[in-house]
Length: 70
Image 1 (tube, rainbow, N blue to C red):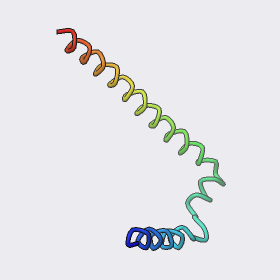
Image 2: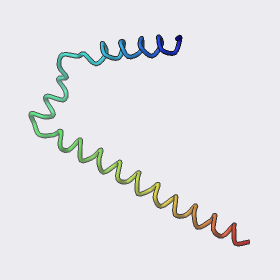
Image 3: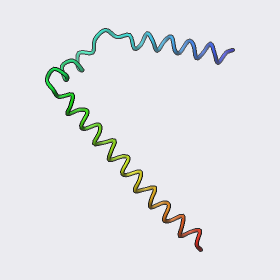
């Protein structure tokens, strides 16, 4: 029962926190077209992180195979 009340309380608080009228910075970025630059940079960073993790996973898999062969 305590978990349910705590979860309900947190959900209600989050609804009030997200009930903002207007985000001026986002409107300005959208109006000037710079929002696409921001999105492009974020996508580039995420793709870089994903590729880095894939490379690390492959290297770790190779090391594990070498260890298991011995």
